[in-house]
Image (cartoon, rainbow, N blue to C red):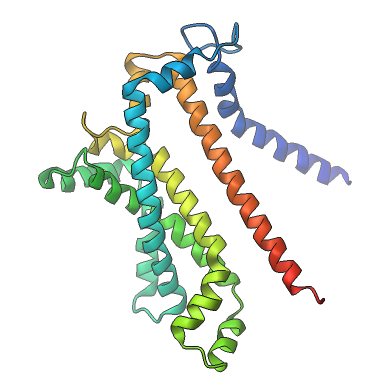
Length: 268
């Protein structure tokens, strides 16, 4: 290993540690015996996790976020996949404009979107409702699916689809038996990112939630202002661990799929 490679690796490691350190500190703070956030912890206890799982307000906010995130994942995956297919395979007029609009929620600040959604949802009585959150989170999550599926479509060999069409398959059969199996990983990745983006969203929630529909992101910020305790660290740790498990599962499934494909391509 050259000196330049060693220095590059050291700098990359320091950057990764700097990015991960705040998240990793939350875990020991969640098992501290003190009634306030402290690092390093004085002792070890699972009391704050017990409080989190037994508190009706925390559980209501968690289940509300889970329901919204699951529904958002399904709807955003459907819309995002169709958008990516239309942009990659179709002959859309103003395709550049459509693509820019589809990813614009990643560029526009969420606080601006929150104000805009509040002004639209309030007269329609959608603030604080499941459908209000579903619509707003879908708008925010569709770009992740569009980018993930578009990336998979760009890696797909066009010769495979042409071969299927030349062998007599129609457009739907070609899509179902050739295109879809080759972009499944991209669709699954987009669905996972859409779920996590919805579950983690907090800025827009401040504008469109009320006492009847409160996601876990807003519940956390409210407790930081009025009831700061290690329960927040416990709730954050549960979210971090669940997110890591979900991403790890996606990685295992993707790796297994790639290995299976490589074995199928090897000559017997």
